[in-house]
Length: 258
Picture 1 (cartoon, rainbow, N blue to C red):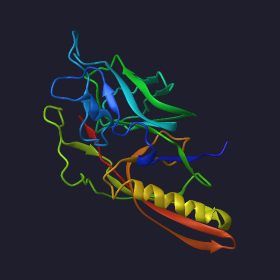
Picture 2: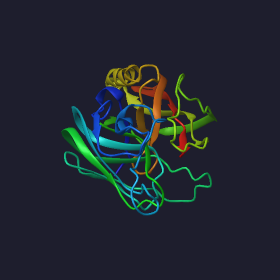
Picture 3: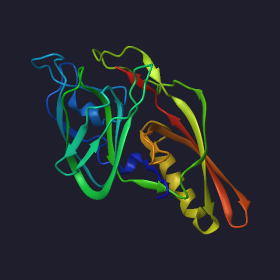
C-alpha cells in the first residue's frame, strides 16, 4: 500500500480552546492541554508513590468536528507508555523507538477512521517520571496527493519561540530543545487537481494565522515522524505535460525536554 501524507489545520481542530476537566498539579491549568501553546504544558497531579505524578486523566469538551488524526506534542512519556483516547474517540498514541541522546521524545500521532466528535478522554499511567504534555491536537485529517513526499529537506535549526511566548512557572523546563527546523517538501500534482491543491494549501496557511496557531504534518504515514508547527509558504511550477511540482515550507516548533 502506498504511503500517504497527513496534516491538521487549526480551524478544523476539535481540541483547540476546548474545555478540559480533571486534576493537574498545582500551578498548572488543565486547559493548557488544548490552548494552542505548546510551551504551556499540563502535569499529572500529585499522588502517593514515586514518581508522584506518573498518571494523568483528563476529559476534553471541544467543538464538534470530523476527526481522523490525533497528535501528542511536547511530552515526556516513555516509549512503552501509551496515551489512550476514549469516550468519543477510540485510539492509542504509541511511542517510537531508537536511541535519543538528547532525551527528548518525538511527538506522537495516530490516524483512525473518521468520526464526528465533540470531545474525548485522555489517560496515561505508569510513566517513569511525572507526566508532562504540551498539547493534544485532534481534528480533521487532510491528505496530500501523490505521497510519499519527494525531496524532503531540513534547513538549519531556527529554535524560534513565537514572539511573547513564556514558559509557565514551575513546569520544570530545562532549556533542552530539539527540532525547530525549517522543512521543505514537494509532491506532484496533475493539472486537473492543481487548483484544489493550491486552495487547500492556502486555507492551511491562513488557518495558522501567521504561525500563531499550531498545525501538524505527518510527511509519510509509514513512518513515526510528525512535526508540529506552521506552514510558512508554498509555490508550484509546471514540470511536464500535465504535471506540476508543489513545494511547501513548514516551520517546526521545537520539541523540549521538560
